[in-house]
Length: 121
Image (tube, rainbow, N blue to C red):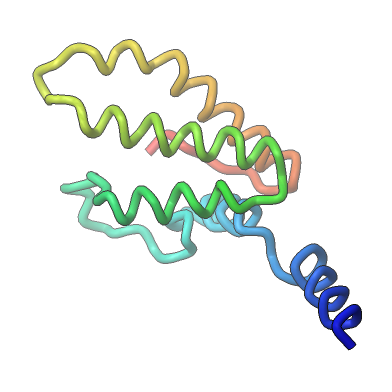
């Protein structure tokens, strides 16, 4: 019985349950937040709380797709790090290269799975 339960869970987890990274790609392709919730029309404060950062990072971290996991987690880490810098500090410029790499990497990884996303906003 235990073998069937473990096997059943493995099948569910691998083939039936939607991958969290794919769900994020799908949501972004539909112009939603990565968790699938609608984007706020009030674009005033885009700062993430620590809990929101951890939740967003976990969505990508739990993906079974290597490139989505790699670029999604790196992008969340970069956004968090830049957000933590003082506003008058020009150090954020050092992150432009890596940010571009991971934005385009995530776009490509999502496109490879059939979801075209636009990450310019």
